Amino acid sequence: MSTSNQAKAALDSIIKKARVHFYKPIQIAEILYHSRTGSGLDLTDLESYRSVSKRWRDEISILLVGRRSTSSAKYQDDVFNETAMPPHLLAELGRLNLETKGGVEVYIYKTLHTKLSAVLQVRDYIINSSVDTFSINELVESFVSEPGLRRSTDKIYEIAVHALFSSIVRALKAEITVSINNEDKGILLDFSRFIKMVLGITPNQTEVVMPAALYRVGVTNAADRGLDMWANFGTAIQIKHLTLTPEITEEIIGGIEANRIVIVCKDAEREPIEALLVQLGLTDRMQGIITLSDLNEWYTLCLSGKYRDRLATTLLSDLAREFDAEFPSSTELQPFIESRVYNESLIPKDWASGE
Image 1 (spheres, one colour):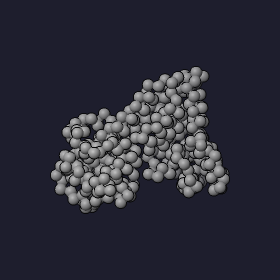
Image 2 (cartoon, helix red, strand yellow):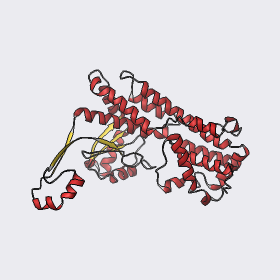
Image 3 (cartoon, one colour):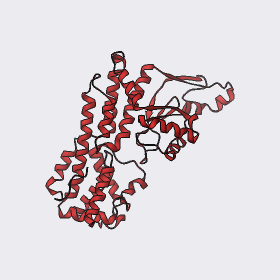
Image 4 (tube, one colour):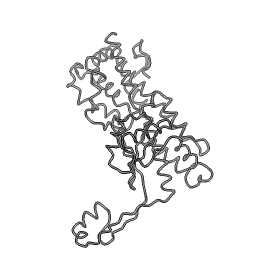
């Protein structure tokens, strides 16, 4: 395989693995842009752009997708590994990019446009669905079946689960109570500031009642083995749409300190997970395993005539709000493309879509 073909294959691999925020492809595009427009970069010299390219990437990603990368420095630097886009292949892309007057940049941003268009179609489905037409199965399938979105299926699961669980918990009017049962006035006085700042109560009012609530942790690490949701009533929730190995299962549960853990997974994964938990001796910490069928049952019930007034409207509006907060459907991309004078005719003639 020629160096040019190797460089394109490496770029296509990074594009294929990218989630919707497209951080690594954007970083490559911006290195190529700054190299082409006269910054004097030597693309074979990694240290000349390793750090500064993160700033270039963040400036564009904030503009186009409303976020900047919060992954570890090590994970961000993985883009330059031998198995990703090492300097000698990046230099070859730079040569092609100069030769085509920005064609590789256009190729990358055209692929981002395709990905964001797919996101917009899913958003339209959520916004335009009624309580009679919405289906959690169809929502998940829209990610699973779309190559540009498949890598972000775990996030649509998280959003759907959080919106559902929060709506039901609110409808139940569930509450939790924090109280101090130690009547020793000395310890109450000595630790009064701690009691106020950490427990949120005072020595004179040793009990507080608050609504039960669930929270999404936010962006998980690259391996997707972190905690996804936690509840102020002590439950930790891990959401998986991929196959769990014994090693990953043990790492997930071992890395979560809560004593009550819920795993949300595909139906086909339930029995293997249960068997793994028995094998690893972790069943005592597992509160429940919820499958997509369970989610579908509860969504259908929430959207039924029985609960339409109490749950349906708020559930769909919460889902739409969380989708917009998580996924970009940028209106800035087309003006950005026009400002750069990008044209699809610049893309190397023998390059097909990376998707």
